[in-house]
Length: 132
Image (cartoon, rainbow, N blue to C red):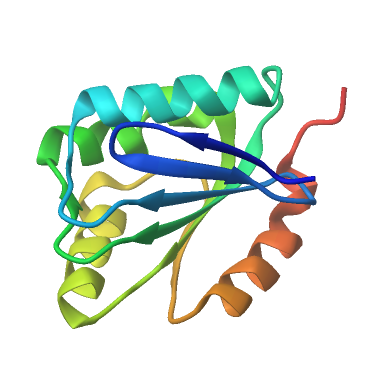
């Protein structure tokens, strides 16, 4: 059964095959605190084992520059092995491209037009998760 955690700005759904779906709610300006809470919840739910993140973003939602910097940094690397970002529209695609090119996450990060292609790519990244 899929576990769901509802945080202030994001809803986390823990799927099969180590995939975590993070959906930023509508009308949200995600902050450093929101991203930190998301990473903390993922780490706790997965007992410190890395996951594969698929991100969707609701209408009129984005992250602050500081939140994007945190999302791409070492704190995220401790709980995530790869990120797949499903782009909603052209404006969101520009923002997501800026995240990838400017913030330069150290873990594999890729943009997708839909959920099925994002999940298929994450399945290929499963090898990145350390087995303990």
